[in-house]
Length: 297
View (tube, helix red, strand yellow):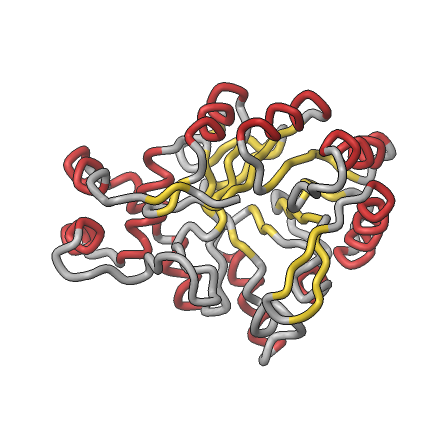
């Protein structure tokens, strides 16, 4: 699965070991347009300039806004850029999310994403969240049909516990899993083991903790003397870079996808790739002492 030391293969597509999550280029609460559309477009172009080759988005980010901004900024897409989008969520307002992964709706979602991204084939399409009303086999079946029609290149899943991941793999050729995972709040170990064993890319969302709504640990800062702060001080790095580098170093099949609307934070996040190469065994042992919480799907 490895492509080179800072890259990985997503199906047959090489991507670098850090991506960009395009949720926060929308308005507050992941709702509506950003305050400064020109700044958002400049940020997306900076993503490419930094050599980041994977952008994660979803039709529900905005809704529609994130996908439209990506196309406005980057279409026609440069060679080597991989864009992954998702479907299956419905928005009612800021921070308001509901699930609808009915097969007929997923077809509508895919057709809409193709238009908004201005492409004939979506590089990676992920089921955003399983719908408790619909067997996951039915939701994925609709996406498999769309894949056979040439509208989707590769399929992935998000927010799955181990049992549903096994069912997903039995229903479709899955190349990726995207779950919440970071230094202080981990996904189920069985999910990670499945990714490692079966050659799946693990996309970690909220790799810096805070979802932006005030929930969860915020790993962009660290208390003085904490393991994260100590490792950052040793390397002249930031706590955020340490959190990202830890994941890159300890999970060779993982790609963290931090999101930001700040060019400074984007540059900082990209620097985690270099830091990952410099972390020592002592650094990793110290970071392993951080108390963790189980992931939530």
